[in-house]
Image 1 (cartoon, rainbow, N blue to C red):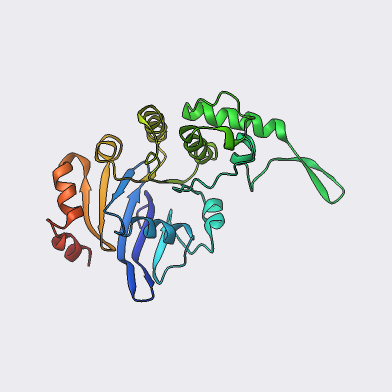
Image 2: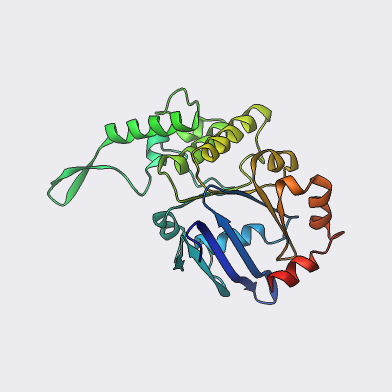
Length: 259
């Protein structure tokens, strides 16, 4: 396997009883690459991500991360391996502030123990939070505010800043701007561009054609649980992508080549 391959899947498959939500997905992405995953609702996009990140256990298939075969028991295992995911649900704790959310489950502590306890290093977590927000150009007026008191755009930016703070090996964003307004969407897209400039690989799941063609290097199209197209951005356009999504183009040639 090439040393510059970040993520590879082979025959990745997920069945829910008689429902074949994902079937034989062969996928590769390289260092620094930004790849969009597109498809209609129920096409298998989110199912694909759930198998990679350990949210669900795959029916069959293999996954490699930076050349090492991996099988995660859950999303925490995936995060510890370097995969940071922004799910549609955001997975933020409403009653905690920004630093507590960014470091939830991986809190910084002082080196000295206090009996059976360790003291949290709030100063270090606040500074790392500020650094992470600055790195992604996220504007949060007061990081001590609880998530509950923030706008939808601010919440989304906090979730994305969490991925950037820890310099992940791979970032996955599932519809990061679906519920945002124009200004908030622009802020999230600027964060994605920043990650691109810094050479961090990213998978973007999106229905937004303009966004995809602006932000990524390559588009992978899912339909009825299968990958039907693997398109370089400069060699395709919106009409071509929609044709694969709707089935006007079947993707048979691609699937035969993949097999």
